[in-house]
Image (tube, rainbow, N blue to C red):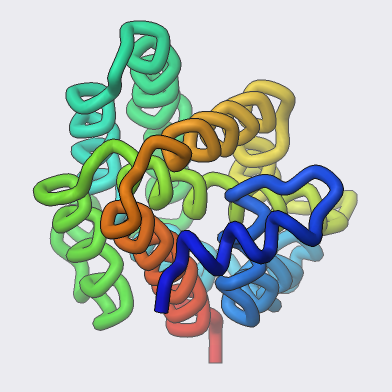
Length: 231
């Protein structure tokens, strides 16, 4: 198996080939299953109870710490100041606006203060946390970008896809808004462009690791959302 050769063969059949489009294609059906997950429809349509929303957010909050650390590794391994500026600005949003949404959600829905800090993590949450930490510890810049592209692009696509109810709880609407706004769209476009560019210089072994990292992250996203959907 040679992912670089597979990509080149695929690209030869495309009018405007992009690495990130190919990565998305080879991550099916997990990609589409995550973007079209019923959890997001229930959330947007107001069919998700406050308790279920809070439980989902408590599990999702488990990614904030290792994800922030991952961005820190990305900043450290970035090849230029221009990349560090963009990544640093995103970290600022994550630790301010997004973190505020989590905290106000926990307060509004009566989640005890200790729960988001030391909850009973689902196995799927722990597996995703481990992936984030391992990528930060051992991954190169392209591998870190692959994880970031997945986590942010998937969320952008589901947020753009859903149709929200008019009477949706403000905090649920806020969660959607965080992933459906011009600044976030611009950031996802930047991540995709930089991964497309960085992959060009990878040798075959590094390219294979990057592609596998992308696919594994998509699989982890699907497994996590399958686990947190209300039964």
